[in-house]
Image: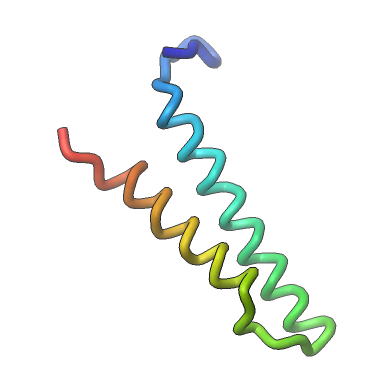
Length: 65
């Protein structure tokens, strides 16, 4: 348990939260590259961002108690 801003969090929850935020940034940057540089939106980086988003979202929000 780590204490941040007065609340205690498990280390797994913190790591999944960071991964979730990074996946959103990866997806946003891929969309930006698609719009500005006319690059293909279907690439390995976008797949990585989507997979990170799905897996970290499931572990953050769909935990079984």
